[in-house]
Length: 320
Picture (tube, rainbow, N blue to C red):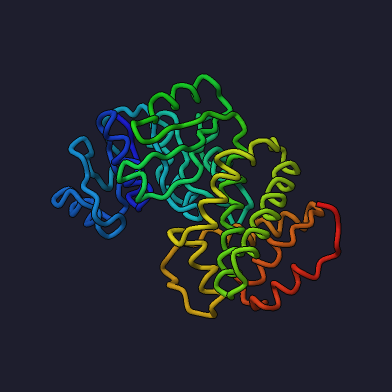
C-alpha cells in the first residue's frame, strides 16, 4: 500500500494515479473532508470533477495501520516541518518518505528533504518534482517527473513502485538540483506572469525565462548541485510549464501584480516565500540574482512592476 499524506489537489491527483497500481491510503488533515470524500468519492473542493478510484481509502486523524511501501508527503512547503514534528513517531515507521512539495523554507532556508531529515534523522527520503499539474495527472494525461534520491537502491525501488500508466518517473541522485529547480522556477513564474500582466509581451517573457534558467543554474551550482540537472525535467521542464500556463498559481499571482489587481490570499504561492528565502541566502553567499531580487521586492510591496522591469532592462550589457 502507498500512503499519501495530504489531500490537496496534488496529493489527491497522485493518489488517483497510483490507484492504478494497487491500494492507496489518502490522508486528509480535515476529518470532515475525509468523510465527504469517503461518501462522495470526489474531492471537489480541491480537485473538482475527478472520481476517486475504488482502491483509494480516505482517512484522517491516525495514520494508516497497514505497512506502507512508501509514504508521500503532499503538504505545503511552509507547513512541512510542523507536519513532520506533529507526526514524528508515525513517520519514522512509515517506510521511505517521498516529499512532493516545492520551495524553500522561509525561516531556515532549507529544502524539503533537508526539513524532513532534520526532524527525522536517518530516514530514507526522496523528492518527487517536475513539470506537472494536478488536473493533468488525475485525468490520466501523460506526465513525466523526476524522482531524486541519494540512496540508489531505494531510488530504484521507489521508481518502480510509483510509476503508473500515465506517470513516468526518471531517477536522479542529485536531490539538491532537483529541489532547487522545483523551487526557483516558481520565482521565475511570478516574474514572467508580471511581465505578461503588465502588457510587456511574449518576447519579454521568453527573455525572463531564459535569464531565469541561467540564474537557477548559478544558484544550483553554488549550493552543490549538478548543472545538468537544471536542464532536465525538474529545471527547464518545470520552468517552461509553470511560466507559460495560467494553471500555475505563481503565474496567476504574477499576472495580478502586473495588472495591479488583488490576489486571493488563501491561495498558496510558494514562489513568494522562496524568493525571500533565496534572496537572503544569495546575500550571505555574495550571489547576484537580479530576477530573484526584483521578485522579492515585488512580493513584499517595495517595488511596482514598471520600475522592476526598468531595473532588469537597465542592467549593464554583457556577454550571454
